[in-house]
Image 1 (cartoon, rainbow, N blue to C red):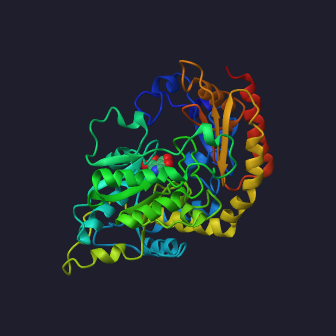
Image 2 (image 1 turned 90 degrees about the horizontal axis):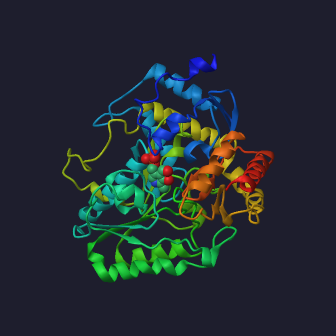
Image 3 (image 1 turned 120 degrees about the vertical axis):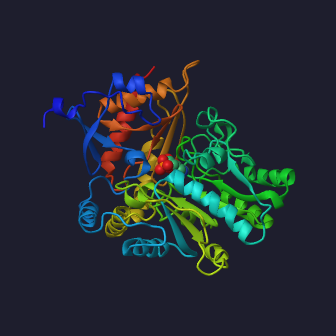
Length: 440
Ligand SMILES: Cc1ncc(COP(=O)(O)O)c(C=O)c1O
């Protein structure tokens, strides 16, 4: 197919998400194919995907097994209603997911990370009510947290631009301080030593609001979208202890960390801290079909089962919860992860990845390099008066050289598919290193 045919005539009707629309439409970047670690652009260039799409294609692109599973499913059962009816694959997938981790007996299916977050917040509120703690309605998030774009998610989230234009949001939320400190933790490899005490701020919020008003705390175990904030050693454990002390549910948002990103199935396993609920999406289907799932620890679901016989226990769900194509994609994705032993592979790759990223420490403009598992962040000093401009220039220059990175503010995030080879890690770091020498 010629390039001209692949380029749409009119870019205007599509209002693009989280995009500088006018800039993009003047300088479009379109992907037309993908395979393994690489995208192909509309002008027939190969681009190495150092971000696993949007943190979702953990097994790389166009995996045959997943493609064929979806093809077969769409020929068999394209859709089945999910309210008061079902289809076998959704049950099979739920069983496979809960078998991945001890202590979580149910999953609730959604279609995205944002929906998983809103679902987890709603389950937390309804659970507190079901166990006779109905005064617990407050939800605590964290500064710089990203929990998607639903009203629940932006209310507990802490990214100013995602909140400031959308009115007063949910009432009754509050926020813990974020854990990022260049002063104490710059250039840390893995989890920083400084910062566990920041969890103690939850005690301050308990003293301020009273525990009897607080339903749940939600945090990303490793914050990705805000620019790769690795939790300080002991921080998550301390949050768990404070929540336990006060009857507050702990929710981990594992939309990025789930499915191998840290070299374990989930961050809860990696950190050895068990939340009451955790959200997933993205890697659950390798990004192929939209899906999410909220995992509930043993006992949460049971608390709802006292409702009168025949009545609906939780008034929540989506037309596409457990969609047959998503369930088929998800089941095949889990097989690919297992066959390729991808979570172990990520754990094995991460020391090389860490060394490679930290070799950028002495490059121009770099004020921090941080990493955990197969996630890395390189923070650049902003150009005075022009925040984000330097990172955007780096993004463009990397793209021109065949490398896809992601930027948030002046932070570059790297989170490649877990099938990456060492020579491709070298390509990422060499390209980024060269680009950093040329940016303003
Ligand atoms: C931690 C976290 N939660 C929620 C979301 C939202 O996911 P989605 O864009 O699928 O709604 C994201 C997306 O990056 C995320 O990183």
